[in-house]
Amino acid sequence: DAMVIQNPRYQVTQFGKPVTLSCSQTLNHNVMYWYQQKSSQAPKLLFHYYDKDFNNEADTPDNFQSRRPNTSFCFLDIRSPGLGDAAMYLCATSRTGTAYGYTFGSGTRLTVV
Amino acid sequence: KNQVEQSPQSLIILEGKNCTLQCNYTVSPFSNLRWYKQDTGRGPVSLTIMTFSENTKSNGRYTATLDADTKQSSLHITASQLSDSASYICVVSDGNDMRFGAGTRLTVKP
Image 1 (cartoon, rainbow over the protein chains, first blue to last red):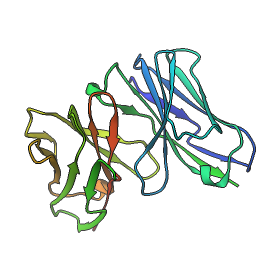
Image 2: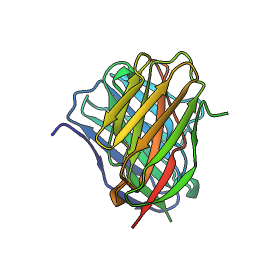
Image 3: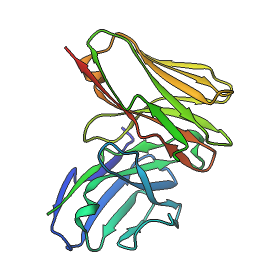
């Protein structure tokens, strides 16, 4: 089945130790998004790729970076995780334009110790 | 102020009962509105999508309504089941961006 896959489901990292979360899709969607969701809050958009074009939200910390080496894969890099970065990280994809809505991955729960 | 407000914040009901969740929005222009179900520790899954001209849309025991004039939507769950326990998120699109509500946390008890 076509889907959005995030790995790992759970990630524990040490304070200040770089960590990478991955997302892959078989939907051939041209837009990929990374969201941060903290407990009982709405997902917060960090950045998105429209094809190869990277779009960063104004309030996304510099600590967060992203890479999209091809249509299918997108990575979220956290260079120096802090305790406040502990959250669920959601990857989503869509075809051009939001009229089609999003398909979300199952998320990666990040714990910072 | 969030452009998508959901109520109640949380809700507890008994299995088999019906419930209605509310979503009010100020997003403009309006393109479409989606309801997502998010199980604990999982990503959101789409339940319904409605455009401006649609008043109601059903998906099994889930029925969403939309009043584009008053900018209100509701999600009605019929004959609730334990597996309905989840967060329900209302997402409104202006055609470019998606605006998320904070969600309603529903707990269905036996």
